[in-house]
Image (cartoon, rainbow, N blue to C red):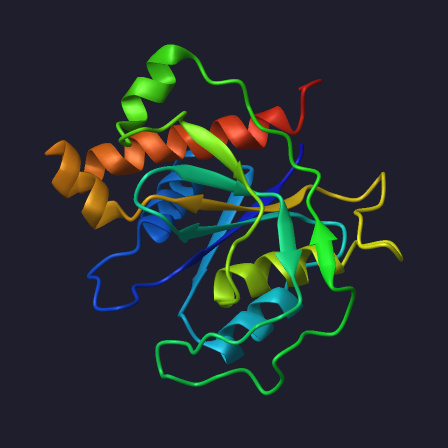
Length: 203
């Protein structure tokens, strides 16, 4: 049985909750083969977390991103310059490794009903993103990919699934749709599960 690790983030920028943590907790509570860990928005916590993930583990990062869509990040960059919640910056502005790493995660095919359930204005449901910033989300994505990267920054053919999903901020989504945190958790847990299942088409 495959085992998938989800890594989410805690609250940041004055938010009471981080939707990525809410979704990760819901999935891990209901699905035996999903493990979840959530880390504070601190550079040191990020490094410690990644060190506990084995090279052959499937691992997907989750974070809150932009208001108008959910996004599967296609690239991760070694540059990291944004301060964390303690206003600390990383010891180096660049991680060790290639300039850019590429994720091989597949986009799931979403039904019209599923896209409508997301209720993100002007959204196609889930889009591919080519830039995930220079903060902790991007750094987590980069470090997960780096464990299984070839010389040119592409994942090895038999490497485990690695990637990153940005979800719309939970508080913004709830305010715009008039629905609560439980509905957000239900909708975006289903989306993340669709993404996971798309990586294992034979299962």
